[in-house]
Length: 255
Ligand SMILES: NC(=O)c1ccc[n+]([C@@H]2O[C@H](COP(=O)([O-])OP(=O)(O)OC[C@H]3O[C@@H](n4cnc5c(N)ncnc54)[C@H](O)[C@@H]3O)[C@@H](O)[C@H]2O)c1
Image (cartoon, rainbow, N blue to C red; front, side):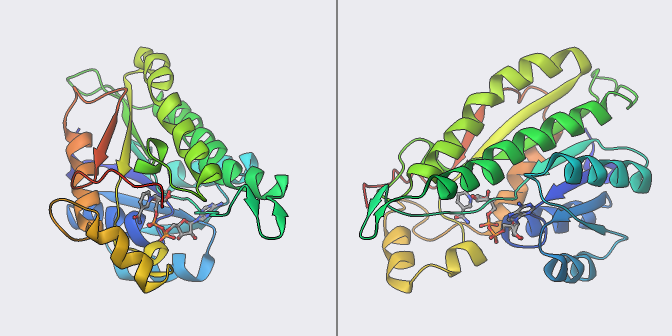
């Protein structure tokens, strides 16, 4: 698939990794529709990305909202050939905290945004991709999800987050197998530690401790490096049905 002619949806595109992906695609000449729950940041992102990018306020955990956003993107761009889901929340907390057990609603909320949201966007975009003409490789589209290394070695306080991200890893292969009949690939990226507003929100000593655990390069990842992974996946038809760690060899410790 050729980035210059991509018709891309980027969820969570108002910030961090998603914003870097939207920027990279637009800079290459592709069309971009940003989906995000944060309207103010979404409008600012469109101004920053330029190149005719558009924004539609979307809650990825809400089926009707996702459906309306995908319809908007199809109408605006003439189709969707790439869907990158970067919307996500951290929802850290102990299962048994100082104030008692984690409320069920908190656990549910993290699963709803991170896991259900990924599923809703993937299946809705795959449906839209069926209308695309085939490339010479027989491809109609690419879906890229964002998990986390916490899917594999979640830290204390990440039970909800790790469960949601592990679920994304788990559904990557069955979705790829199912959408193969339509020429749609499904891939997941599991980032290590990247310097985004999500990370900047953590206390400085936590940021430093996380960065020092990365063997090489001994620093947090740059959002542009995540975006480069997205564009590599898009361009390579053999990448399908798996999760790629993008993490400088970090293996997260219990805390
Ligand atoms: N930054 C990291 O180190 C890191 C590491 C591993 C995984 N990740 C994952 O990468 C993704 C992007 O993270 P980031 O660091 O760029 O975070 P970020 O907070 O900078 O961006 C996340 C975006 O998602 C949006 N969002 C949240 N809930 C939403 C919803 N219900 N519907 C639509 N949009 C919603 C937010 O408004 C925000 O713009 C997340 O899924 C995160 O879990 C990040």
